[in-house]
Length: 135
Image (tube, rainbow, N blue to C red):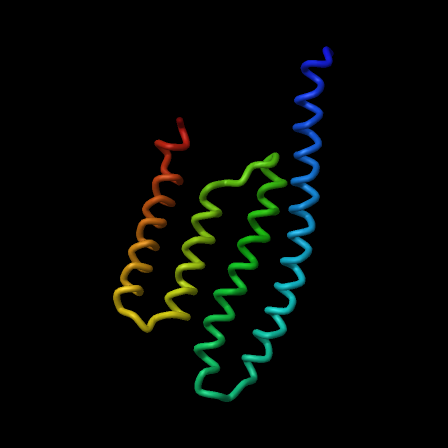
């Protein structure tokens, strides 16, 4: 193997290694936050205030966000270092649902957030369609 071909492959391998280690560190951080969120979710279950149900729904959606990011990292390693687009769409939809739950003071903003969810669902449909998978 010539030196001209080895150098770019060596850089590529090194950067891939850096990316993989960084994602593993991120996964560990997400696991810690997921554990903290689980504990906070358990505390909200035993709370007796008016806002407890509202807070519970918000915490569940945040929990799913952590879960989806961890699933994305797992999928990255299982699919030979590739991030599937549909997982980003799932995360975006969940994040927008959380935003609607947390900030629903303005009807116009809620409508715009709902429209963005609709766009992401349409994009998810297009990405998942058989026609696109064949090409």
